[in-house]
Structures are given as structure tokens and as C-alpha cells.
Amino acid sequence: MLSQASEYAASVDHLLAALAIFSVFICLAVSGMILYLSIRFRSGSPATRGRVPKLLGREIEVVWTAITAFAFLFLFWWALTGWLSAERLPAGALEVHVQAKQWMWKTRQPNGVREINALHVPMDQPIVLYLNSQDVIHSFYVPALRIKQDVVPGRTETLTFTANQSGAFDLYCAEYCGTSHSRMRGQVIVMAPDAYTRWLDSRPRGETLIDIGKALFTAAGCAGCHASRSSVHAPELTGLYGRRIALADGRLVTADDAYLRDSILLPRRDIVAGFEPVMPDFSQSLDDGEVSALVAYIRSLGDDK
Image 1 (cartoon, rainbow, N blue to C red):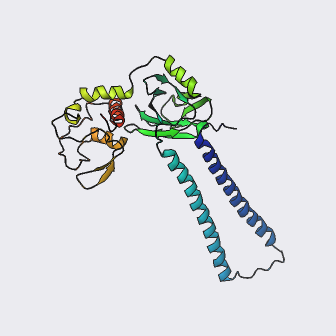
Image 2: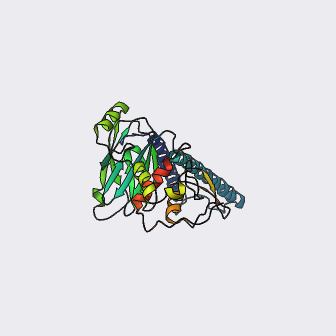
Image 3: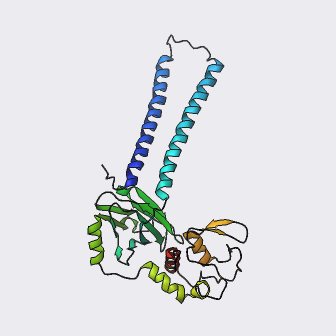
């Protein structure tokens, strides 16, 4: 039996079991009725073949429709609540950046430690993965953790999980991404917290994505308008991530990863209320990796400078 290596795994398995049981019940009920009616009303049988009362037929239809509708709504509610719970970003989670590329997974720990086709995480601690694709659509899939997320170029996807079993679990790309798609495999290694800390300390550290974004924030000229001491009237970025933003056209949007990317690449599409559309277009000067680094840096800006 496949390991249930995350808190989310059990709820997925319970839902799958319920769907399987319900499907088998419906199949047996329909097959049983077909078999019973085929035997009872076979050619030459003495069964009465009068017309079914119209009222009785209507009652059967109403009851059958109500039962199946209730079952559908219940299963939909069950699946939706589980999905919404899994999508909620937990507070204090360990943030790991993952970049998909033909045909490998490149991961970066919060302190800059990097891996290829491997991801080390501590057990019993919430993990948030920020996923980007360098080329085509990929899909981050770990069956033992029951997690799967498509990774689309030009977007930052998030995926959360809490592993509750130690061990090495297979990582696959579940979206056909080219000729070597089947070789795009890796492992998620879940370790005890102390072992994870020792492993992290033993690895050579590099620049974090946030460090890269911070340097790029100045190098690309963003600080000239958005820094706290800038004389240019531009939106304040400190504490921006996750807030509701009022736009000039009256809409309210959430400053999430997609909004930040669009603000960098398509600055004239969503103009913040009270500001002029003077921000330059960076779509030709920044590549996808640089945009991801800038977004990571802006996301890291808290309420204090």
C-alpha cells in the first residue's frame, strides 16, 4: 500500500474510498435491477405486464433524483473543503523555491542551499513550495504525499504540505514536457527536524532567491521609485503582499504572486488608485527567473523596513 506520508494524504484516501464505494453501490444497484427485471419479465414468464401508475413513476423519479443530487452535493462539499484546506498557506511555514526545467527539478532552500532532483524537508513542519517553470508546463507530483501541482511558465504556483513520515519519496513530473519527460524524476527526503538542521548546516550555502531579488531591485531601477526615501510618488511595497489593493478603475484585487508579476510585466493594466501610469514595461528587460526573484523579494517585505 502506498505510504500516507503527509497530513493531507489520509483525507485524500478517505475521499477516494468513499467515491469507490458509492460507484460500486450504484453499479451493483443498476446491474441488480437489470438482472432482476430481465429474469422476472423474460419471454413467457407469468409476471403481470400492466402499465405502471403515472404517479408511482413520478415518485420514483423524484426520489432517485433527490438521492443522487444529495450524494453529488455531499461529495462536492467534501472534496472542496479538503482542497481549500490544502490551499491555505500556513503561518510560519518553511518556504522553498522550486524551478522546473527540461528535464529536472531545481530547488532552493531558504538559506540558499540548492539541489537538483531532490528536496530535503523537515518532518512535522508546514512547507510552502513556490514553483516556477523555466520553459514548458510541468507538474510537481509526489504520490506518497498526495500532492500535485501544475507549474505553468510565467506564473508562480504555490503548494503546501506537512510531511508526517520520514523517508525518501518519489517525485515525478506528471505533465508531458518533452522527449525526456519520463526521466524527470527526483525524491522528496523527509527528515527529523534535528537531522534536517544538521544536513542544512553541512551544505554549501548560496544566494537565496530573496537576496537575488533584493540586488535586482536596485540594479533594475525599482528602488528609484519604490524605495522608502524615493521622491517619486509610487506605491509602497513594504507589507504589500496579500493586501487588498484598490485600482483606478474601481476594482479591488489581492496583491498575490500573479498580481506582482503582472505589475512588473504589464504595468499599465492594473493601475493603483491615486497613482499615474508611469511605470516602465520590464517584459523585454527581465527574464522569468529575474521576475520570480523580484516577486520573492517583495513577498518577503514585512511591515517593518
